[in-house]
Image (cartoon, rainbow, N blue to C red; front, side, top):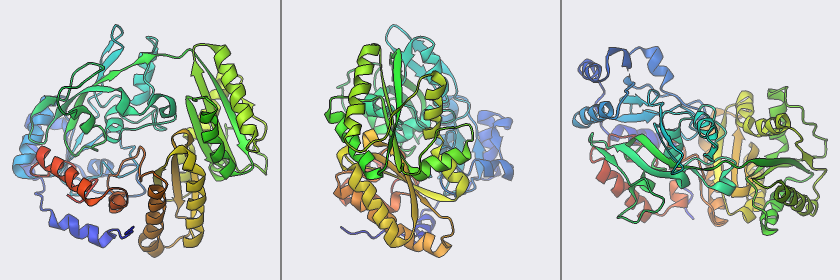
Length: 485
């Protein structure tokens, strides 16, 4: 397999080839007429704030930031920018890890922060209609008050927007049992790059009426249109759960146990892997996490089962304990109280923040069939040893989704920019050999696109480019993301 990738200089050349006009005073006045003067941000301090997300330490300065309130306002902005050939990037909460919302061509950022209304929770049909700027956890809490359940729960659920979740088809711990964002979207209102407003489907559970444009929009990373309304399907809320923390003296054994649990007939509602360094850094970063970790423990699985019958859950937990015992697991910690459960889940959700507090890092969102997870972990560590970089691994073990955090630490800039990408390419090639791919939930965005060809052949890339051209003939919407066009 060809592991060549485009280096930073090549990428900069690609950027310069794509000629976009930068917004000027006349554009700012046009946007002020559309949205109001207070919602067109021109000060450099504000533009700098909107020019970064959680991707490494990357920063790009937009020419103008616009904060619209309605679909019609977005339509007018896009129509104007399409006619003027100004690049436009839609931005949610800025929690992305692939650079999908970075305005690499300057141009205009459309911030979706004012689209923050839960329009309707339809209890009769177990559906909800919301705007894309609603925070994931706020939505979860609102439907839970009515006895309903929206399962997708990314680690950033307390701050990420639902629109961004759709842009990347985000998952989270509960995806192992309940699926990703894609599995809950019924219909979308979308503003096209030309300014036209369309609905992509219907508010029904079954849809076989032409091409499924709803699913095409999900995971398109803001390159085909800007989502302004979402219709989700919901589930009844499970009444009970059990949470257990399982220690292992071998990280590979922990990974081997994952597939065995499923083969034993148990489907957890969460199954998370954390290697030793991840746990140690979280405990240093959050002193209120009081889990004791013996010296010999090298990894943990955090496992949850949920449902409405406690007897069934106890049997599932007993079966899990039996299975993991065959992989040299230590004493299983069962969370006795809601506070203990919350602490264990906090330990998992705070890993990324803890890593970031220690060093600049690159987070690779690898995913393989779950039974191949041990080989992936072994391979990542072997590649790191050969190239001389340290990685901290954790992730959604039940999905085979391993987050590989490569730590910069004392590594020099030359190695970081020139040699490390070769190691990352090897990691991705390993994923593909194991039947996986290069992103499970973070998307391709900006930082993974040099590696896209490792997972997707040229014909598939050309088909994607053709779809992009059809939706966006002038290539104004989030250009330079996913692929170089």
